[in-house]
Image (cartoon, rainbow, N blue to C red):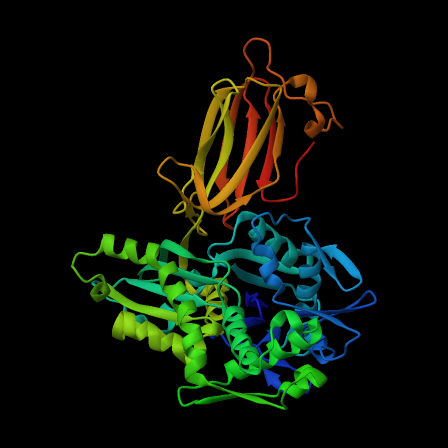
Length: 522
């Protein structure tokens, strides 16, 4: 069974590749009704964990601790594969928590979905996605968790690049020799991404990506919560955690029910706040709520600037939008009417909203997993990758950029993107401090969103290569005379990870590391 899986912040959507068709799987919710998503929710009570619909079923029970939007935990600047999550009385690693959630998703696909006929022990082959601006550790954790949950992952794509497949499959007639580019505007539950994609036939190339790891539907929910509390004279800090969580959930549901004709939002305060409710219910104006949303939409447009700048640079006319097949609006949060309204005001008639905004990425992933569809993708890293090195005989530290943010992620039939460096080692132990960042200042120093990875160690001194030597504990000292001739080789894998191979060229000694994977101190 071949699947496209969009692991989302609030909901996970699964599409199936079925003989040239790409239907979205539906699941039975806690009431037995079919819905086209699986809740990204976890609940804990005295060591017992529940996931998805089973977690929603106990969400109102005060004995259970509920964790929503846990995907956002992956986007922290110092997230590593062994980071710990405390949930109620349970503490476990982030990758284990996500793997167990994905294991429940696998079980739900087999037992409570409308999947095509498949044997229980049949391999589930999947293409999955991460936000375009996801750092290396986030990509590694996602990939590792899917493998632990029993999925065979053949590719890891950027979410907006996957939506580009869905666009060309659905709207191929809009693509011409004069209009070969689209911009994907992907506003999900927890992240915003934008990508400029060049499409020729079934070949897709991501030209540029940008976005924000801290902008999504959760923030639009928070804006409504703030408006409601303001109207009744309450604050978030004055509410118990469970009461606030129930209010957030009710505001999310109210937001998702809005349509272009909506004028009022009614929130049942009593059911959320109990005795703390100053009134049984409160009514808010949709216009007032949209006013609170405008700065968030504007933030998304500002985050698109690097992508639009690339489009303008490639344009042969003064109006780059005339050479654009469309701005494709996807992601569950993009369903909010004010989002489409503002985008049309800014970009005009080039704005096309997916008929299935919450499922566009999953459908694109299902197309990608279909070998017979013939689609090819060349993706981009979206973040600068490099290493801090000593300079001036150890008196200074400088940043050495390895790959730029537009470095190519190899497609299925593409050669690897490789960078090599050869030098004489000066010290007994190499300590590599890798970072990813959103941008570089004019002096080449990382700034913006910066992610620091666990240090990688390599023994230049051949006496430090004994089994069991913990290199992190070895004092760094200069080697007498000339050190060994060392080669560093960096390769971008098809999953968008960086694989480092360090070789002592004279001794033939070699070690390989996946940057962003588990710490390497030995």
